[in-house]
Amino acid sequence: MDDAVIVGSGPNGFAAAIELARAGASVRILEARDEIGGGTRTAALTLPGFAHDVCSGCHPMAVLSPWFRGVPLAEHGLRWIHPPASVAHPLDGEPAVLLRRSLGETASDLGSDARAYETFFAPFLRAPHELLADLLAPLRVPQHPLRLARFGLPGLLPATSAFRARFRGERARALLAGCAAHSILPLERPLTAAVGTIFALTGHVEDWPVAAGGSQAIAAALASYFRALGGRIETGRCVRSRADLPPARAVLFDTSPSQVADVCEPILPASYVARLRRYRYGPGVFKLDWALDGPIPWRDPRCLDASTVHLGGTLGEIAAAEAAVWRGEHPERPFVLVVQQSQFDASRAPSGQHTGYAYCHVPPGSTADLTPVVERQVERFAPGFRDRILARHVLRTADLERDNPNYVGGAITGGVADLAQFFTRPVARLDPYSTPNPRVFICSASTPPGGGVHGMCGYFAARSALRRLARLPGALAPL
Image 1: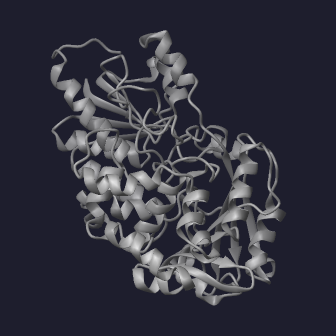
Image 2: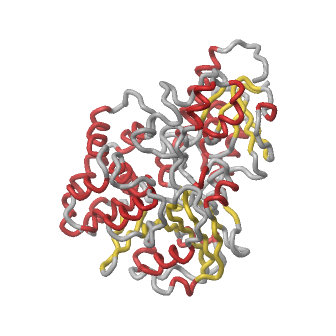
Image 3: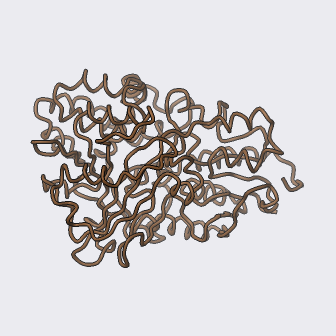
């Protein structure tokens, strides 16, 4: 009997497995697909020779996460490529705003708001890793309460009101609105200012990197390290019921709450299962990948310095688009997130050619083909873009969920992260990674701190499981 079985091989599943193996536990990972990685996979989606990231394409949290910083993935083949800038945010009729590691260089792009921007971010940059460690943790007594309070009190506000009050010009507001839109929440909601501030802050600590060779390289390095610790990985092992689970003292699910409910319903209280089934996943995404015959022809060529480009215009435009998605609408000018990996990693495309990656938020379960809408938004800031397209690949919400059942309704971040569900995901418990069954745990992005390639959900779930395992009797029947 294994000490632990992990269901799912996303970054959080690997983080849980590695932490358990480091503690001396015997651990096995079961992956339903024939390949590992979950959201960190790379595939030839368009033409031969073009390597496209299937979901996660840029990894600011992976290089800053306390867990990722503590594992020797470079020794297992992972290499990060850092661009000159993290984010470019084009605007109509004026130069783009660039988020660079240098606080001063970024501020100098913001006109009259330069001083206000520097004054706002400088205190958080005195000890950013300590602050991020508290921000990427579940609800608990923080290690640095004063620093977290200074961040958290203004962060509780909606992005719209917070950034309009702090900054007078549209350039700073737009830059932070694009960062806040990563929350996939209406920007009039509380906590969105915190999301915008966190993402901008990360760009001042490390330039947002891509993984050399594709996001699959992250999964490959995690798997290599896990195997070096004695762990085992079995692919093609879909877990639909308890009968699909091998004997183990504990099981950790790197899956959606609904999948946990389906598999474990007979061994969990009905009230807890009902709460899992009420979990809110929120909007989905519509994703496009392109094979291009050259770089994206941005009107402001400085956009080619950034790994990520936020397309949406002003704070007001972005807020209107994100609010429309929550009303069940498809905005004509959506917020579009573009990643241009091949601009910095030549292995992604044949010589002289490039990959393109973009997605926008859509209502959950949307069946709309937004190809013309997304490409029109790119063309708005990159005239002639359509002429560069050699081939395209479309992923609607159903395609995403079929490819990865964790993406319920096309939601790629593990569920809504609003005030009602941020610290209580997937249900309200003192230990959100545990369940009423002392041998069943959840380690997916549907637990704190939520979506992103950071491994912190898996790390905290493993710590929870180790505490429980220490109290369990030596002889146990199969679940």
